[in-house]
Length: 193
Image: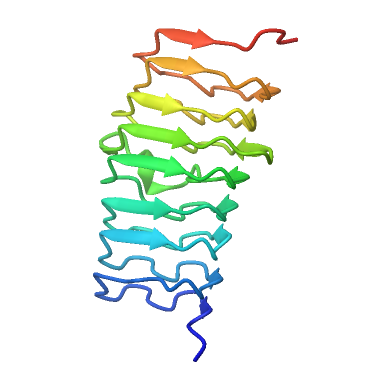
């Protein structure tokens, strides 16, 4: 018997759902499919290649596990408010975590995430605008060698202390590290033109 392959958009929107096990047969999650539920933990199977806009929007996630195979994370796909660490797979090619209009930019917001790591991959990876904006507790940032572009305000107002710019980065957008009050050291790759 085949397993569930698709969870359509808004499927569980604003439901009291507090636990979910996503099957390995799942290949598609629609926009806001699990948005505004009570999910605290989720594991994204390797069969899912795109985590779309709002997939786990406004969920009180404390843990989110990504597997190899995931290629794209859409705008407001999940909230990092209560997550301690985020480790992204080597297959990731694009991450667009937050939008400028998001409620995440509230000056009083305390995003708990302290650790962000991107695993080295072979495909170019783009960090879109505002990805880790206001990550005020972020103290460890490990950027992968396949990152080619870092968007506007990507790490602005975060608490990172050290940044090693990957060798393939050709573009660091405006205000990328703006208002990073704890930033002490930035290491650029050799031969940067």
